[in-house]
Image (cartoon, rainbow, N blue to C red; front, top):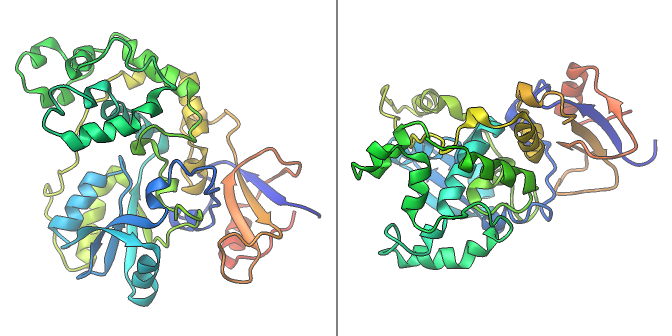
Length: 359
């Protein structure tokens, strides 16, 4: 058969780990360049030289808990590693590299909430930045990214304009504003409406804040799209237990309760009222994460026609350095060859052995 040969399958149906799926993932580095600006030349990571371990930070995926574990229990430090330094540590010095991943739809709600706060007009002036000139300067340089979404902060200027929309009056009256994060939002639907309008307008290609970057784009070299040499990807929903196990393997004990470091924060809009159409659009936006990290689609998105492709990239070397033909995974696109996947074990065998896929 001439041209590309592709097999079609649903996200989360591969009998492969997330790491194995990621290593076969193809990411167009040019298409997702806005996601990877920070990782073009270096990779931000927490590194423990004592335990020969590297943690790659992914925002809103147990990142606070993980950095706490690395720094306070595993003697790590935050570094910006050049690509060749990272490769040498892993392939020459036998370091392991891990990260945590989170169900994409759930993470998107948290990512948007964080990004919304960080990009509000109150970051340019007002009480929370009056003594932070560098933060004000940063905001001045990035606020143009919000021009596409003028409705997001309509009627808001100060941080209290925002707080009044989601925080109960009796809590605001105490002056302990962090306590707002412990209470259900009182949003009357205005914040929810803005969120849903944003999802309608957003294509997933140009995030206005790093917290909206996809997990997969945090797990590649920004210059090439090549997957990072991960040893393990753990579930962020069980981060404390996972870190206890990782530490135990290194001869370090983390007692129960010592990992409660992640920031608890209630959603500032009522997630339970997000429409099915909006949820389905989010799943489509996050197709790269669902396919490349082998996450099963949530039930609401099961019938939206979101599929992944296993594809033989004939005549393209991409970033592979061996002589094998490229067999890659990516979200399904509009190609002429469409063959349904019927045998997951066959696919598993083909991927692991890196053989040619025949359609």
